[in-house]
Length: 390
Image 1 (tube, rainbow, N blue to C red):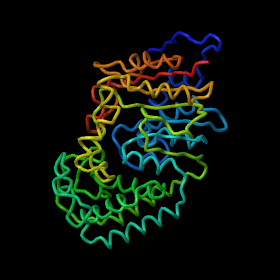
Image 2 (image 1 turned 30 degrees about the vertical axis):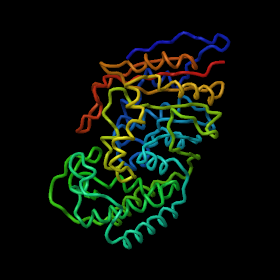
Image 3 (image 1 turned 135 degrees about the vertical axis):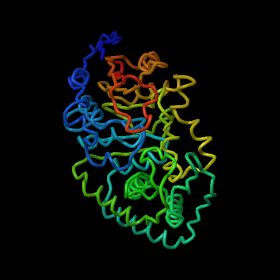
């Protein structure tokens, strides 16, 4: 690990590295003790398995380092499944998040936006009634139209697949703007496929659905979904602050209400990571993608666009400088590989709007891959701390 201070480009206000940031850089607390455990953190971090999810312990350290005591305001413009905003909520901060993956938006809304637990059960009852009235499970799905490691229908018993199609049609009809409905959808996405008894599919990987194996077995959707929801709601967020998740492209104009921020904390897609939209294909299909979306939608993803030009971040840094408080910070968690030093490349762009306070690297060569190649060729994680000028 290396650490260094960058030049101070705003002499009227000397750069100060927050104590919590210095502790993160020197101690890397997420690598030892309780925080090193895979299941560390609030149970809602496990609402749905998802490739590319930031380690909750890292999010916890960043939130603690950069947000004020007594409650602040923060944004994660690449919020994914809401790991950083959830940690902010748990610490009493107002949390905002952006993403353009419908599966990620649903999961993060379930974690971040305040909800009425009784409304979740009402949503489940409505879904159960909808499925019972949709006997043919017709949501216009065409057999074989979505196929990565085998067509999606090959993962399920025919009767189970009819129920899945009925449930998919329900969310296509009513959406998931409501956090209660997003909770039902997020829990369903978790049990959609996997290698454990709760899964609706034949045996497959719980994160990236590999080609299924084993016998076809009818597995009714509602009972398994009810059990998952019960487990999640048992770990309530009674003391958490407010949060709001937007279906929002971070490179476009940000919503007006996302302002006066104490911190922007985010982990953009790594330059040389595996493709999230490919790894999460079945959940994206269930959340609404059709066959054409798998060709067209990835073109919008920054993980694709940054391989052409890192200037895709220009508008993000400009808006960050506009929305941060005078003392506000922007923290980036990045991935370094043999092909790209993301921190160096992004800092060169960010310096037009923000000043660089600190940077350090963390070797991740020791990290386990959980049975799949989920790190690409990333050799180090990089942490960059920027601040609004003036």
